[in-house]
Figure 1: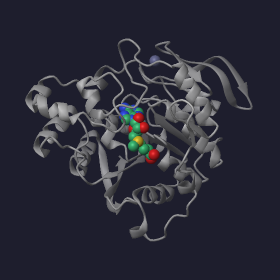
Figure 2 (figure 1 turned 135 degrees about the horizontal axis):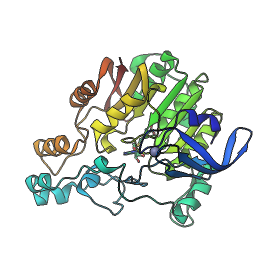
Figure 3 (figure 1 turned 90 degrees about the vertical axis):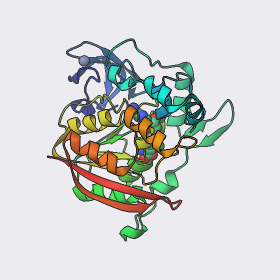
Figure 4 (figure 1 turned 90 degrees about the horizontal axis):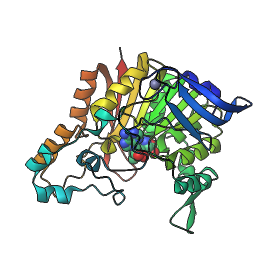
Amino acid sequence: MRASVLEYLACPVCCSALRLRKSHLYRGNITSGRIRCQICRRTYPLVLGRPILLPPGARSTWIPDVSEVLGHVRRPLANKRPLEPLAKLGIDSVLADLRRPWEDLRSGPRRWRISDELLRGAHSRRSGWLCYRGRKRSRITGLADIVEPLPRLQRNRSEIEEMVVQVRRLRPGSLLDLASGGGWFVGRFLYHNKTVRQCVAIERDLQCLWTLEYKFRHVSAGQRAEAVGGDVRALPVLDDVFDVVTCSNALGEIAGISAFLAEAYRVLRSGGHFLLCHSERPIRYRPLTLLDYRRLAVAADLFTDREYLLKLAEKVGFVLEDCVSTEHRDGTPRFVARLRKE
Ligand SMILES: C[S@@+](CC[C@H](N)C(=O)[O-])C[C@H]1O[C@@H](n2cnc3c(N)ncnc32)[C@H](O)[C@@H]1O
Ligand SMILES: [Zn+2]
């Protein structure tokens, strides 16, 4: 981690500035140590060079948004939203028992920990090897896509390419990418933009941090981009510091969309832009009816559709500048929205 990125980061609990403790620096890079909040005095670890600034109530692994609001604690099968049990229970009983886990993210006992398994995975991910169960290993994919040229015509661009083009036009000095996952957008953006001086990618599924680190190095952005462990509903970022905030294809996985939008607004400087892209189609709701799914999504503050999202964004204070329709590579319709903080 580079020491200069601390000018942007904050304690996720009280949003105050952070200081290094017992750290070692080598050529501006912090190689070991801890990070401490100057006000509430909480400390946060630096793990294999990555700052982990998760608030105490956060999760550190992937979990579907629906499981999170229902309080499922075990790691569910990948990409499986637990809608079948919901349909069996009946939506009214589910609505009576909903949780809003992001409301106590900043308090309570710590829920995340750094396991040995995570550390083992981290070593292999940062070297460009991704470890799957036991011995089977495969290379981190997606690097070929990152270096592909951008189509000139808007109608030929995927949603990620459209975001890259739009952000590039804004010429940001600093950029914050939220829920960065495997870095499909942020990796591509950094490859096609050499002028952004400070880029921070926030992700709570900690395994992704080292994949991101590897991708940043691969596109020669290791000295201007940083992968940080954090929750997008309690961002470890100071107020009013970033020129541009982005979030690509993650809305359907975030529980607490209003808190996420409010945090994006808080960390943007005035006049700064927030760019989002996502699928136009309603996300998978079967075997619930669409009406029941919408009741659940509105009550639990999950993503429903672009109109409702843009309404929530306006409530937070954003002004909609533009919203374009485009297509993902698989042909599914997507939108790219550009919002501005007044
Ligand atoms: C589909 S991936 C995002 C893809 C990514 N933006 C890209 O361009 O490659 C969605 C990510 O959102 C992350 N996520 C969901 N809720 C989050 C939260 N509250 N805080 C941080 N990350 C979150 C998930 O862990 C997952 O990695
Ligand atoms: Zn603090």
